[in-house]
Image (cartoon, rainbow, N blue to C red):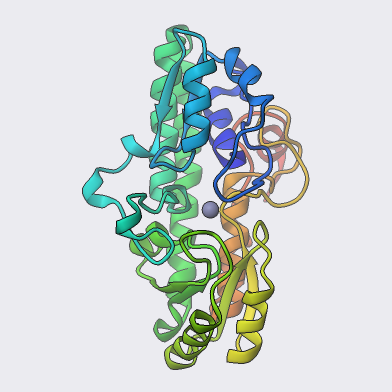
Length: 303
Ligand SMILES: [Zn+2]
């Protein structure tokens, strides 16, 4: 996915050519394209989220990868099974935990660290380069973490509740002390039943949340209808699509907001705006990559 491409290329810089398997979130289950087999057949290392998110692609990857290329499930190396979250869209009976670890900045940091380890193993001569990039990138993620805590603190405690269409905030909410009160998208990724919709509307009214959040990747008329009937605001957040135009590859990217950190900054702004917090807290966050064109632009800026 784009945000993994962005995280890995911040570490790999110009020593690594990073290609995205899912350049656009096409379907919630991330079905591979036939052409992905060819891409995989040229890879030295295949990094996936894991936690069952890319199950169909893993199958394809195992069949088409070079013999020596490792498939590395970064999520499975970030949390233990005890830390898995099961919830509305990822129920325990289904056996698939909520895979959205990366929305939690602390886990994104772990992803960056694990990517650096994998790249160093593959290319030991680049060890120092990867370590420097990791250090710089970790610093930037630490800033994001700090801003996140400030934004959360600016939101009135009674509004620190999330009802989203797509169920991607589970691990973020645990880290930053928010309540996920529900998700509209059912486990089978279809639209909810009329009965479920009525229940959700009641739940929103009861919880008194001022807003619910949709997803640009999964536009939903039902989500809009629920917001209308429950008389709350609605806005979109993202767990994959990077803001604006640009490349997810840090070495090619000239848009300093088209990054993982830029995506989270935009999410924080939207949460703050709609839940009674202070969106200005996000303004000075450095969302640029630590390598490539935006890194240069940033170093010479006085911001
Ligand atoms: Zn998602």
